[in-house]
Length: 444
Image 1 (cartoon, helix red, strand yellow):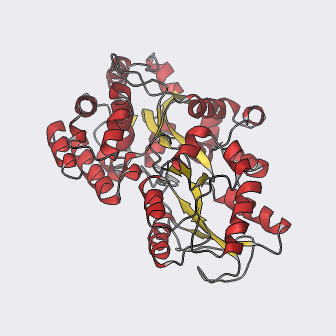
Image 2: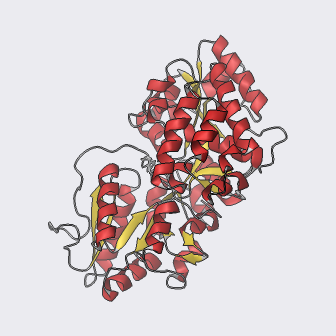
Image 3: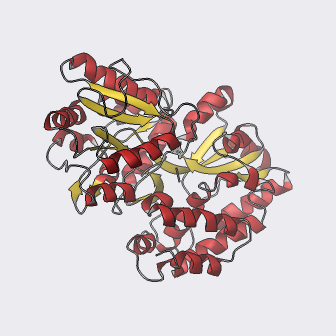
């Protein structure tokens, strides 16, 4: 999955997998936008001193505020920050890191791309260099920045668990119980169909939203070990019975009319899936926590009236996975370039230790309805404009025994793309579970 899902916009990452999260909110516009903090027109890789590249949208305001705060207090060692649209950033960072022209602070999603940076010697180890940052980061999120037990990246924005959102107005009108089990989910689908309401909104045209369904179902049925075997490249790992059952349940939901008739044409980047919920056309939506800010922006009055509910993904009877496990994007991350000078690296270490995700950044994230990837902010949550939602989502992350990164980000790019393509065919009824598993085993 990607959005911030700033795609994913490019959720991003969660746990023992040490994999990545992608922001999935589609961003348009110029590839590189304005410089923050330092002014001027330096080109990428040509600024004096430490540099950072990150994304527009999502937590952009938090980054701008953070770098300005650092620069105001450290005029002799400023950090020049540049902001890129999501796709443009991913293309540029790929070539820049490989050519030794990366910024000092490398924005990433953990997972396979961080591991490749480590394997190629592109980033420096952070273990012990920034103890304060290690202390304040959520443990389940910090794990995603580790490779072989060593710390190479730390969270820099919001944690992004996937949540089941629902329209409280439609549930009340139809007299439907919020589903806590898979059977209750199927009952809710039938009830909403009878009311002429699309039971579940999903942006099928964007493909990545499908991942949230197979991830939660697989984890609830078989536990996190099932996907870990895939990450480890075990032979025929995709043939695990838990994945077979998850795919069967997906097709069961499709055949029951769970997603309506036009889900394959709904686009996430345009916020069409979110709009179906706040315009009372759809009753539920499985999505990352980043969309809460979209509800606040696109439907402020509807949201303020209490029409948006949220809950955990349903349990599966007889399932082996802990029902408190979550999936999504643990956060996005900063790594430090091995090609930067010692002085630039030291500036980066000091920034990460002193300013990254400090109290100012936490307040900025809360103002946007986002969940900071740091520990010990319960008192702050109580003082925000959205305490109930933020407390719910924050507790999900704190209490999760396992936080699993988006599969397409945890896997190498070619496997991730094959996963999206094949899964979309499963949702469309053009591929059986067995055909999907055979095709995906061929990518291992």
